[in-house]
Length: 300
Image (cartoon, rainbow, N blue to C red):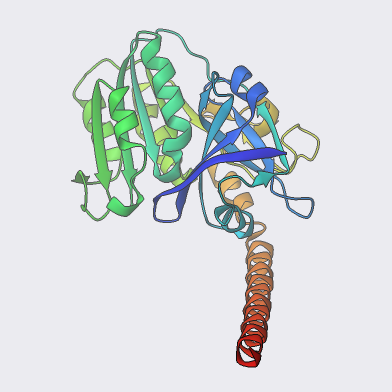
């Protein structure tokens, strides 16, 4: 059992949770993740370790409420427990002094991007961070990323914060200026990572992406997270999660991500229905209790 120490909403449908997990906090490195199961009836989901405190023995998880499990997770209160937190899993990011590194993050992808940018900065790299979101209400970790970046660029689709642009626009401007760039790291929606790789490919710049394939166990047993990398079938959980963005078969991966959409929607509907029934039953119990109290008071 893993105790929740802190839980807060940091953007629209985005939450930050700090969990006691001493051994994971001690072992984790940038780029790694955990598999989480809320209770014995729940599914396992992968979440990136956004930060860790070795002294306190805690890890920080950032997630977006998009399906049944993450919506259920959002209802958990400080002091309550999570049944399973397994990790650290996946290969850590290879960190060295490359030179100039551009870190590109879209949406919730900023959560895994932050520890990588921080590690690159500590290794002596010049770090340029380009982050994007649909709007200001979805911006997360802005201050944290700005601290570990030599240059920080914010983009929003609607222009409500930073410049109105896709993250690929300032990236392309930097590359076309002739500025020497040694590494690009991109994490975010698959379509965003696909087009970041397309932008960097003509310049021959190494581009690493962190994939968010469907994952069941996180240990290479199920094969659900398989991806095509340069014509070879690999598993995101044990071979990744980071791969050369120029070698990923993006269209196949994106198609596989949609494979369980119907089942996910049905699971969400069932959970919402059960939750409404539970709330209704609680309201009825409360009403009966109030009636009993009123009867006693009237009798007195």
